[in-house]
Length: 272
Image (tube, rainbow, N blue to C red; front, side, top):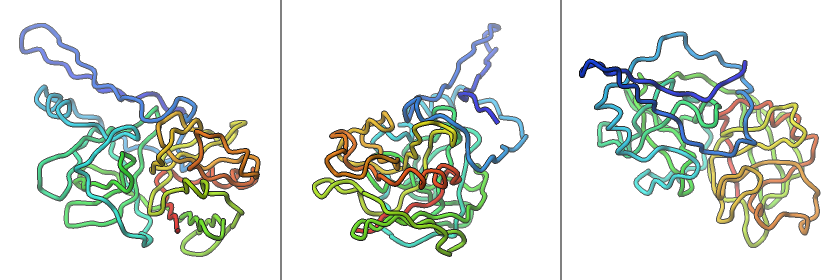
């Protein structure tokens, strides 16, 4: 199903004149990462509510959760465990909190670059879930009200073992596939910790890239976003790595056939 860049339009007629204020998404990743959700999930048919002027001002005063945005107030996720596979999507802009029932630290848009944003749930409390965020610095997380989210489950998880150079695909906790992988370099390795599948090129694209919700210390020509780590196929030799793509994960071309079919939001664990 084709996806268009999402926008919100608010109409205020208090002065007798229609004031139309669009709240547009800013780009979080490059235009080269387009394509639809591999899960082919259909959003709820519930109509979008109209934002009030106060709500627009509220969101405008907060930073937006994007791969290029820095959120120093976001709690760090330092765990290495798996999750239950629950992933969350917000159909409208929502506030993000450092802890439940506290002041909002950011806001999250439903899409980035025309792609629905799906985030893995790593913890929950009554009425709240904690999700991983794609913002700087690494391992950022935040809390969102459950009532503002669509929740579903993905059975897939990726595990990257840096020392053994193996990338494993698990389905429902069982090892399904395994490939040789080249994670970063000795000087600048792919960061360890939990992350997720953020976006990707279409499965049929000639050069397929899977962007993750984590960041390295160098720019990335693969995604067009500063520091965004990606999985992609390339020549195996270490000296073939582009100098601005040193933290990315390189895999054999045949691995991308399976990886580009993964649901967005699927958990990725990187081990040292």
